[in-house]
Each structure stands twice: as structure tokens, then as C-alpha cells.
Length: 334
Image 1 (cartoon, rainbow, N blue to C red):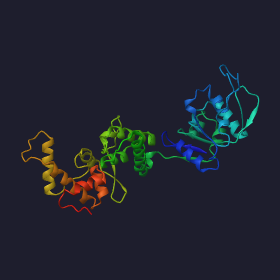
Image 2: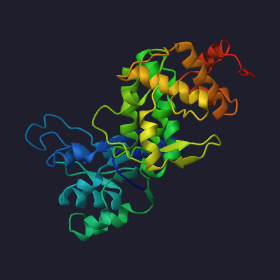
Image 3: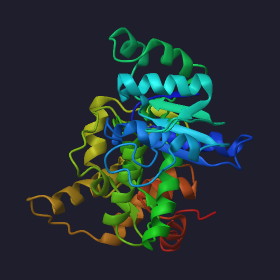
Image 4: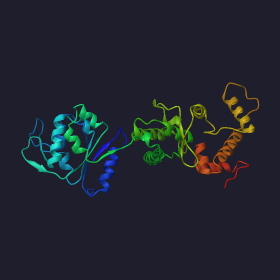
């Protein structure tokens, strides 16, 4: 089997899953990253070495093929193997036997080989960097693993999974993600795919305060470039693309977490907030409880009374929203 896809899409995770659900699950799963092994050692790593097989070989050692006997051998980044190593790998796949470096005895092995690469192996064959016969031997069942930007509906699933993982590992109690953070994660191009997403969630868990939610300012602080057009969730769970002229307003929303005043009272309150935050004098004064109450009312209106959705808009947990609803007049808690 051959997994094809960009770096970080989870090819090894899929290979491990394939091993667990197959008839070889009771056997070993042995992985080797071909890109991490020096060219002069790759043969001994794959096939093993006999004592004295080369300078410094003080004892005999089994290679990855022998260690994976009865199970699965995962060859990651197989596209970078040297021409010589490719030839010896081809023979091992065809004959189902290997010969240790410095040895004279062949050894039968029963191994399922799963390979992976982020290169276009057909292009590598045409360029003369990869053996055509080995490519056809490996390409029995090719599976393309799409990059994260082509399966954005999976992003919230991964976000929640990694949040639980790092909360538990680091002893944190991060409540979730703000609406702005979710929209930004859905819109980001993810050049590093799932590996990059995991790292960003870990960063958010480190930077966010206990009991609070992860916001954009906790995530994209490492030079990542966000797109101008953002994706966001609709109430029915579908995705919509925010127009470029709406993005600026979305990016500058802070206190309201995505809430846009539409009536006169809300507009007046918004002007007073801007006056307080800016350099202008705020003659009318500003009461924080009044601002909070207005935001909660607007969130409940926009989500048609859905408390969970309203809490996400405000960057709160549902319990925190319910607590605040008790002090807000004119809002139905049911």
C-alpha cells in the first residue's frame, strides 16, 4: 500500500490504523523514516548487519524487515531512497527475503509493506530519480491523503481532540475556542496540515488563561498569514465564505465577538464604547454591565435563543452564559 500526500496530513497515523484493523494487528508495527537515516546506513537499518559486516559493527543486529516479521513495516519518505537502496528494496519485496549486510545467508520474512511519500513518484520516475520497477511494485494500492485545506469540515474535530489532549497533558482547563478563533482556523491555508494545527492548538492552550477560551491572539503569533476571505459556521452547521469587505469588520470585532449592532440603541452603545476605547472624550460615561447585557441580548437574538451557539459567539462556556443570563432582563433563559 502506498500513501501519497503532503507532509503533516497523517500518513503514519493512517498506516497505524490500517495495522490495527488488519489480520496482522497482533504482530509488530515497525516504522522507519528514510529521510532521517544517512545513505550509508539505510541498508543496514532495513536489512540488518552481521558482526564485522562493516567497520564498527561489533555485533550482529536485525534490521527493520526482520523486526517487522509477521506484522507491518512502514517506510516513510520512501521517495528519497538512494538508487542502490531502491534496488535492494525491490528484491526484498519481490523475493520476500533479505540478506544482512556482511552476511551470506538469506532470511525469509513475512511483512506487509506500507510506504508513504510527499513526492510525486511518477514525476520522480520520469526524472530518473526513482526506479520505475520499484514504483510499480509499491503502487499496488495507492491512497491519496488530501491536505487539510481540502477537508476543512474536519478542522473542528481536530481542534476539539487536541484541546482535550493538551488540557489533560498540561493540567489546564481551557474552555474552548472563541468564534473568531474558529473562523480563523477554518480560513487558514494550513501549509503544515494536521501537524501544524496540533502545534497551534498546543500554543493556544499554553497562552490562554485557565477557564477562558482560546482566541486568535493566542494562535497566530508565529508569522502565519491569514487569508482575507474568511470561512465561518452557519447556524445549520454549514460553512459560508465571508466577503473581503466584511473581513475587516470581522477582524476588528473585539468585545462583541462577531456581533454587529443593528438597532439604534445598540448603535449608540457601540459609539460610546468606541469613544471610550479611542482618544475622544466619552461624556455619557459607560457601564460595563450595560455593555455585557447588550452583547448577551444580541447573541441570543442572532442564535434564535440557542444558548450553546450564543456562548460560542461570546467566547464563553454554556455555564458561564447561563450565569450571566440570570442578571440580564428581557432575555429568555429557556
